[in-house]
Image 1 (cartoon, rainbow, N blue to C red):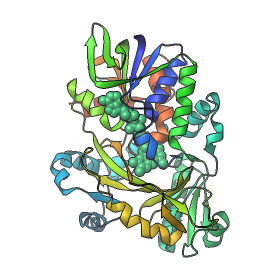
Image 2 (cartoon, rainbow, N blue to C red):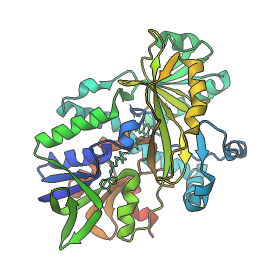
Image 3 (cartoon, rainbow, N blue to C red):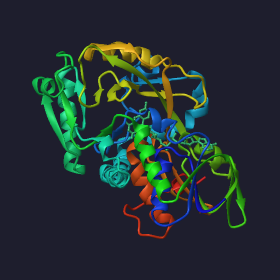
Image 4 (cartoon, rainbow, N blue to C red):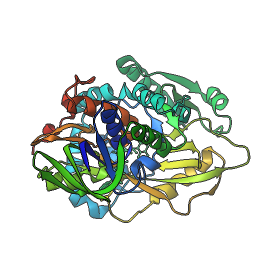
Length: 415
Ligand SMILES: Cc1cc2nc3c(=O)[nH]c(=O)nc-3n(C[C@H](O)[C@H](O)[C@H](O)COP(=O)(O)OP(=O)(O)OC[C@H]3O[C@@H](n4cnc5c(N)ncnc54)[C@H](O)[C@@H]3O)c2cc1C
């Protein structure tokens, strides 16, 4: 099988890259060892987060760090045994979260985030999938007035700097928006621009169908068989070798397997997360996702039920699941919304692909001009898939990129 491009990894990022290349007239083969969007892009909270201009920071306050160190939190947890292996990532993450550096990080991140809704809308439109997108935003709910007011103040700053839009809801406003939430809540920050989905995989599959209708091919194969082949690349597919002039690595949390084999020492790590679905009691409904920011989990109305997604678990990607945060979050969620029984037999686990400076890696491989990197999207890979797809396609085909790609180059980790 021959192509202009092979795209390795059919998560939300790889599917969007493949679609953007194919619609520019190139022959593209998309390769995954599984079906499309069956890994991290399957189990997320389904939010296309226009408000997420400030990437998730490593706390700088001593008290917060001590709280996390006790390893009893809902929002963050860690495997002690993993710490030696991820220590240098954690050190870099902490340093880049310092206010001196974080301002630059935020400005670079916001330049991608600002396009997320429009770019998904464009792909959804041509894929006949706009019906999958809900346009009610999502709400960060508050249990205390102090946190609520601090949240409103932060939102105003983000609005002034980055044009994000929100409604500040008091307790009554929140009850009007979400009548089945508990009245213990003192208000909410309603981000009005984000779109959300009731089935993240369904959106990726709609894009994949569009890719197929344009002549793109999706095949099973193992990215770890990638070898240089003359001036291009070869990878083993289920039905034989796939040869292409250029290759895009979009393997999410598995990207380092391929990059390391080619001699790149990129400081990648994962933040794992879990989900569980619940039935809602009686006629109770949630109109849009909520985040219980004072406890640290999200609850999203999904096609399968109410999806509770957990915060961050620092662990090795392939270590056995330890869904302690789910056990801790469930009682907190039951305080706020009438959840009935669990729907899934086992918790789902995924791994957010992370870099220590909180920015994704989007750009040409430093020592392989025919290879492109598209990974490391951490908490917002579902959000940024469509933006990344366009950016990679523009750069790899010689068009003018619609966002200055400099901050996302792999060279920043020059090693
Ligand atoms: C609990 C949780 C909640 C989240 N909520 C949100 C949210 O609301 N909004 C948001 O924007 N983001 C969210 N995220 C983050 C988001 O899900 C990820 O950033 C995103 O899915 C990453 O997409 P990806 O395409 O890079 O990786 P993936 O979706 O993981 O895709 C990588 C692909 O590579 C394939 N692969 C791996 N190894 C090989 C191999 N050897 N050969 C071939 N193929 C291979 C895999 O099968 C997979 O299909 C959340 C994450 C978690 C864990």
